[in-house]
View 1 (cartoon, one colour):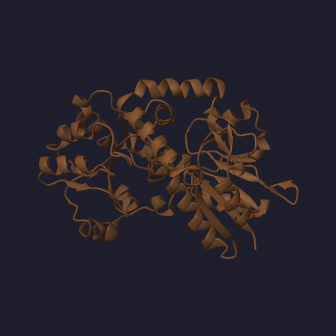
View 2 (cartoon, rainbow, N blue to C red):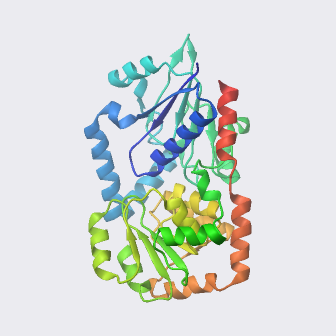
Length: 361
């Protein structure tokens, strides 16, 4: 029986979602695999984890310029690389010795690294890059293989010194249901199930797991438009309450387990360009309207979408309805977005990662 240890972190929802998707797929393909998942902050100190979470959330919300400077500085001189060996932390060391993995998979960038020896041989490890830019904090000397979202990021990692044969542009693992196309009777059934209109185009407004960004302002601009809005507020209860008080017929939701259906039922998505969200929307072939990217990784994700012609950035909220209409009313643009998104998608991502895992094991 082969054992796999997946290391993740609890900042945001993206890393955990990638972890869960990968875990479920690997188990479905090979029930003999013994897979353990650990949140590294839980093995350092829950207090440290909460502190880092609060610093991250606070900086991107209240001091985005400071976060941008931090992001750029750490990319310039790799300040965060290989600083703390988790394998020597007593609690983590005890856990990893008990798990005794044959393969370690990382779904996060971090100053914490893991080097585990088995029979005097280093256990191989894989890092799954979940941003559309190879920031230097993804570069870890004890990682053997990298999975990148695009060929561009593969090339960037190569420029950072990783051999090309150790980098695989397989994409970012997401639920396979994002790739499915909903139409006809199934679409009618789901619209009825989720109490969505059949006579209006649907715009999905996503605020990320933290419920951040100018969601209220966007909602205010579009609430009287011809579109039906489906708004996901994440864990921001205050935002949901505020929107509930503002709207008449729109759909306001917090966390739901059918985001894939909502994305596939929508005609367009308005969101911050997080790595996972970007991948899910590309998979669905839907037009993406970019608002409030976090300085740093989301700016790079935004550049990728704009360079490929599948995203439209909203710089002025006063013109957001016009910008959306300019895309949704243009059959040529919609056709390009659909075809280019299909070209950029990695529907076989999980299958290829599983193949690599089996080859390593």
